[in-house]
Image 1 (cartoon, rainbow, N blue to C red):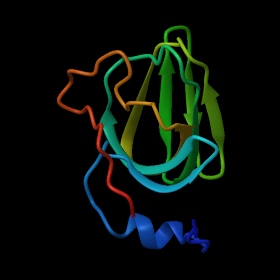
Image 2: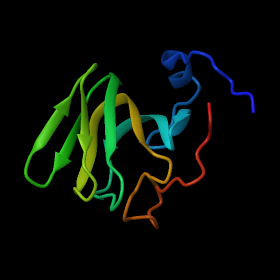
Image 3: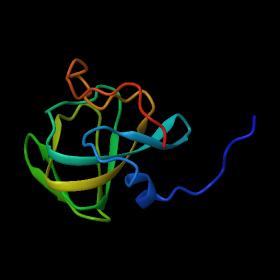
Length: 124
């Protein structure tokens, strides 16, 4: 099976959409997906029972609200939210974020009935 091996230009990919909280897949490796999304405003409090999540800010900034603290992430900064930890991303201005997580991860975690739940993600 031949694989498409090529570079990904993140600025170009982010330029292909304007909506918020709707992740797109830009790559896959070892059962993991590399996703990008634009954040704006508050997301819902949620957790992921079986998956850790990696967040890397490409442009802008956002706060990761945890029950015991708030972590501000700026361009070039990243964090891992371990499985089972309740969290809520909040962006006061638009942020472009790259996420790395298992392919089984649903963006709203334990809140899969939310209007923001995305199960069939677009591939860019």
